[in-house]
Image 1: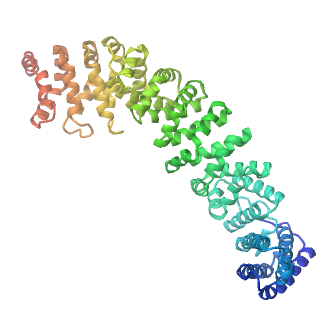
Image 2 (image 1 turned 135 degrees about the horizontal axis):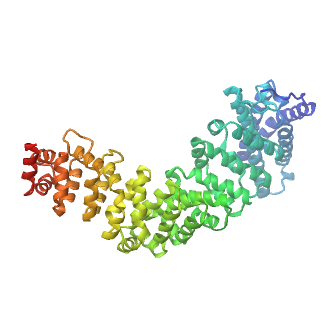
Image 3 (image 1 turned 90 degrees about the vertical axis):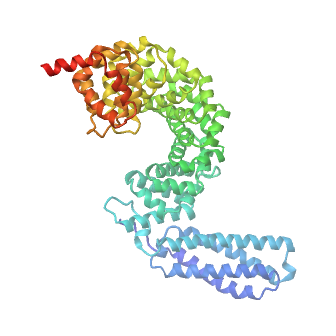
Length: 567
């Protein structure tokens, strides 16, 4: 990084000389004051600290080139002149305007000095005075060293804290540019910068442009880095961001709610949304905000809906109808996040399930199931329907929907593994007519294949249960045994050497196939080798094996074997 070199300012040198002369006078002078001694003791200690910091600054090789000192030093000189006036008044009892007023003036003087000490100390600790590259730093590029980048970040935050309006504006612009050009810098900014100073700029009384740039900077920071999200949250950034969502411009609201969504990605931060009254703020935003604001607002609500206090607030403040409406009428990404939030609510207890059913939530979910092509959205929709299906009312509604079972069958045949899992589980649990079961016989081979899947946990069981449900229909049993691949898969699963599948699952399917006592089904299974495997499983006392073996054994079994041996 190449600095823009500035010539030392004679005025800055002169101001520093004046300050040092004044301090040399004030320190011994304050010792002679006999009134308000405790307050003057505090003031004297702070004057000594100022002198020490100024010595450190003047010993730095590039102090006179720093752009902040021409503003800081005159302010400090003005304060010291005011302290000199107080010193003169207290040294002459006749000049004291009044005890209470003087105490107030001394306390104010002490406060002013404290603020100046903080600014000077920050300037010294930042390291920007020790290297010429900190004068007016050019923007770092990808070839810049880590040390150069750290120095740049420290300089930016020094200007943000103690610089004037123009310094703050330029510093924020530089910070945003850095974050946009180098995403990896976000973690370093969180570590080396003073994020709390950045959050202070979100205050409603701050200059409008500075406040807007600060929102942009915070939003970009938390979007890029988990470390930054944690830092902004711990520095109290969530409250000011929510206030901006309430009263900021459209673009500020969009950036602020993006930041809130990023911060709430951490489940441990969810409680704070409720504590700050953020649920109502986010609900108002997703009702009337821009598309971008709605996307991130719904995303934030989805993130925090894992918290019970937030769920209660959502229900009490009418959030469920709003989410359901967005789920069917919003953009694709809004639909996905809203469906995710609804799925979380539906899984959180009977109270929320009842509310969702009362608000026609199941019908809206079924509508989205039919309309959406997004695998993620479909997964959340199915999860919500699955949770609601535990209700008798919802179960009756699902049973009455003609296309529901057809959609489940299509997802079992063509969906992702997770969609197959949830669809099979629903198919197993929802009561559907024999006519509908016959209509979806085409998914039987897919269910048999799913029985072989070791992952995810539970898939083999739900596939088996769905298959057993469909096999209550005679024609479906015949369809299964006609499919050579499905029969071979089933027999292979019965083989004791196959340890991928728990034997109770294929045993249950064989028992379901033979429930009607069909000789054709019996013959096909025996010829495929099922009898021998079942015999071994029955001897091993596998659950259900003896019953399945009994069903597979029949009056004609002996003749089948006789013909087989004679041939």
